[in-house]
Image (cartoon, rainbow, N blue to C red; front, top):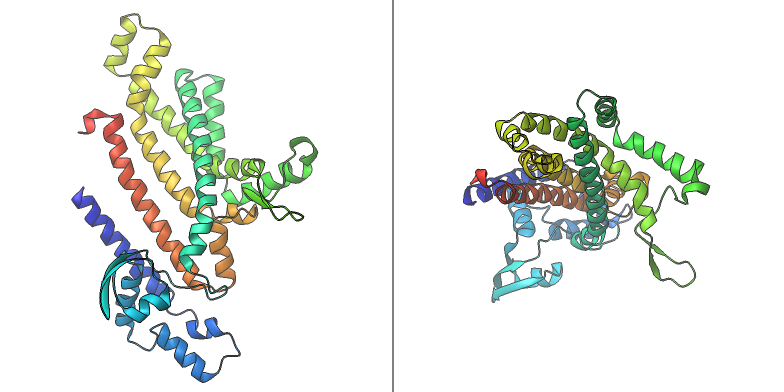
Length: 343
């Protein structure tokens, strides 16, 4: 675990360096903050406030200090940046804090507030999509393996290849148009909308679960196809093992052989796919969220790119990296729970 955590920290450091270097050449941050009407004195004050007057290497270490959960700050910096956490010391303070990702160039809000406000929408969408893909994919994969060589197996293979080949943004446009516009009278679904909508008259926020259906299905198509193929392939390997033949020779019912003996032993590669795709859905649902106008990290990031709001984009990239690392660490623990042989 210590080795894995050390590797995770090195990966985060590399991602941070890449993100910092990538956005250094995109315009003047001070000018983006004050706009085109700012005078020279204001620009200089902003550059000093953002540490742009310091060497690049020093800017990077100050950026690391900001995004780290542990930091060293002057007393006035803690108040100015509105840092939340626990600090000790007098003029120079050391403490444990919420990572500081800067402020939005456009709204002047803290990036952590913007992302934390959008993250629940992405979590709900990604969890629903991977749940849909996992249940249906494992079921179809098992059926295809049991019915190997039949029309059911061939249909599952052809459909999964089609699902893998279809880009998410293309499927999002097609599904939104067909089910949200053409067949709206039948489905009752709309092509755009978030989990919560604001009533124009009362101003109250209302839950709209039906808005989740189309983006979740669209986002789940590719992982569904891959999970189906992996489950089928893994099940075929396990069904040819000696312990399965022994179970059948003992006269055990087919459902016991499949669900108690074969399926648990075939799930390891499937779990890898599910957790990997879950992390990717959390971090990569940009186009789907944007097309369906779903309030989440993806839509917030695309909007920030359009407005050149780089602190929000940088914060979203770092959040995505953290999600991948946490999911991968969780996968290792899940292996040991589901398969004692891993120990």
